Structures are given as C-alpha cells and as structure tokens.
Length: 503
Image 1: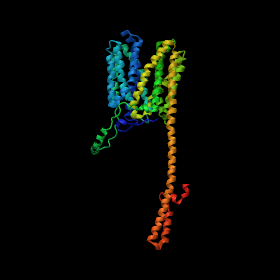
Image 2: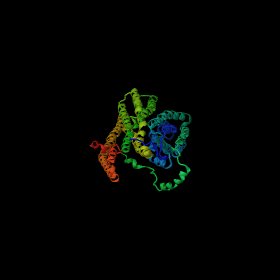
Image 3: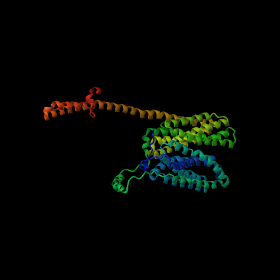
C-alpha cells in the first residue's frame, strides 16, 4: 500500500516535505486539538447547566454526543465542499461557524438551544476544519508524512490538558455564559489556521506566447467531465473496505475506557480529584506516544508494513482493556492508564496515515469523509451501549471487557484480511507476470538470433555474387576480402559467427 505524493489539485506538484508544510502542520496541530478535545472539555460546564435548566446529567451528555456526531457524520459534506471550493475557504467558514455556535450558546434559554448552538453549529464548524486540515497535511508531506501525522495527532492530548483547566477557570470567574463567550473567541483561531493552508502551486514554466498557443487546448479541456465531488469508487479498493470495516468496529470500544475510567475509580472508593488525575496521566502519556509512533512508522522497514503496526496498536489497546477490567485498586488503574495512553496514542498517530497510504492523495478527500461517516454511527452506538450494559450489570468489569473485545476483533479483522486479500493478491500476479515476461524474452532471443545469422549469411553470398559479376578477374582477391569482412564482428551479427551459442 503506497500513497501518491502528488497534489492533484495543483497540477501534479510534488509534496515538499517541509518549507511552508511546517506552518500547515502547526495549523493542523491546533485544529486536531480543538476537534478532539473540545467535546470532552465542554463537560466541565455540565453541572452549571444542570442547575440552570433543571435537567439531568444524561441530558447534558447529549451536547458532547451531538458535537461528536457532527464531527464524524458530516464527513461526506466536507468532502464535497473541499472538492468544490478547496481547503482554505472551507476552513475559514468553518472557523466562523465554530465561534458563532459558542457565542450564540452563551445567550441560550433552554438546553435545546445549546444542542443546536454547540452540538450542531459548533460541531459543523469543527468538522469543516478537521477534515481539510488532514487533506492539506497529506498534500504537503510524503516522505515525512508519518512523523507529520504523529505530531499533528499530539494536538489532541495537549489541547485536552489545556482546555479542561481553562474551562474550569472561566466558569469560576465568569460563569458558564461568560465561559462560552470567551471560548467562542478562542475558536476564531480556527480561521487563522485555515489561512495557513496555502494551496500548492508549481513553478511557472509557460511564457505568454505559450499560453496563447494553449488556448485551443483549453476549449477541449472544457468539454471533459468535471471531477466528482464525492468519489465512491474508493469502495472498489479492497484495502479501503477492509480499513473502513475494522475502523468502525474499533470505534465501538476505543472511546469507552476514557469515558468510564474516572467513574470506575470513584466506584472503588477514591476521591474525585484523585480519580480525575487518571485522565491527566493518560493524556500526558498520549502526548509523547503519538510523535514517537510517528517516527517509528516513518522507518524504511516499517512504513511499507504500517497497516500491521496499526493492527498491533489496536491489539495492544484491546488487551489493555481486557486486563484493566480486573483492576481492584487505584495503583492498578494508574498502570492501566499508562499502557492505555501508549496504545491509544499509537492508534491516533497511525489511523489516518494508513488511510492515506491506502487511497493516496487523489482520493483521500472523499475517502476520509466516507470513513468518518461510518465511524459516526459507531460513535453513537458504542458509549451509550456500554452505558446500558453498566446499568444492567452494575459492574464496570463487563464494560471494559466489551470494549476490549471489540478493539481486539477490529485488529484481527484488519491484519487477517489484509494478509489474505491484499498481500497474496498483489504478490501472485507479479510472480506470474515476471515468469511470463522472462519466458517471452527468452523465446524472442532464441527466435531472433537464427534469423540474424541467416541474414548475415545471405548478405555474404550477395556480396560474393556482386564481386564476381563486376570484376571477374579479381574474384580470388575480392572473395578473401569478403571472407575477412564476414569474420569481423558486426552489429547484431555475433550469432552468425557462433551459431552454437544459440543452443
């Protein structure tokens, strides 16, 4: 599986792997942080919203659920907009939507208003930033793309460690309305990040005269059909289908442990602040795990097998959940969070790198939209399903066992199907093609060499006849010259002097 390091939207410009790409990476780092951390950081306002509107915790939890659903579920819409207008305009508009949603939410008079403002409007704005930022990162980096993906993915834990304390501080000083208003202003930085997404432009090699001569070609190009706004042909790629299925299964259980680990610690009799520290530990480990995994994925031996590294990361994460389900004290939960942070960071750094490698640059904008849509369904089913299981069993062990089993299953599906349907299918035809080519070349040589030998013999006989007719008195002299001429090595005539080598 190899990605195409060419930006098709700019006339086939090769990815620079640096330069302005580092500014694009910085913007992608911030956007990834906002997209993944904001739905979790907003939960610090839930208690105040419960008091303000007289609702339950499950009602406020829908804010984060709707926000995540918009982030994932609007993937195809983002793909269409990017293919139609480009990444930079879409991100600029998305930043305005993200900020507008939080500002309007500060004037809300019911929980329904907050659903619409934060969940729908802000969620749509973050989605319009997240997907185009990944597309631009894929266009600017090729050889260093695994490292770039790891660094950009590190924005999620960094932003979570910053936004959660900031949200609590804003709530203490300005209340939830003032906090929403200030966060809306902070989200305007998405527009700044969008401005960094400068399209790749190749060097101008055509002069004015050449451009005038190419006017005729432009009229012919206009007759060609326009590019598809959403390319469903990616489903014809077996690797993409395998990745989509395994990723959807993985998302069912991947986000469950971070949601329930704090409640799990409280259930074991630990204090609230001590229990909340577990997420800080998880996030701190995650910060270093993602760039490190990006460096490892960029190694020459590892990169062609990156899909198996992702399978290992998923298997590692699932086994961590299964073992963590047996935790009985705080120390064991700390150990669980350390290993979960490592495996979670590995998955976060590799999931989009593998997708880029499967579909390449040209189809990535459509592929990521379709994948996020499938994952949106799993996000809406996974955590609520785990919550129902907890209500039925009253035991966190079964929740972690279910999550671990789902992630392990996704790892097995990805690795096994890729080995059976991708590796063997790509290697077998290549072997047959080499054999056929080698056989054809051998037959061509065996057949052509005698023909060349016969041509040289006929040429020699013609020369002798011409010499005998023109100068009969010097036949002896001229025949010796002809024999000497035939014995000398001629181009493509080695087989005529040595016919035994043909055998």
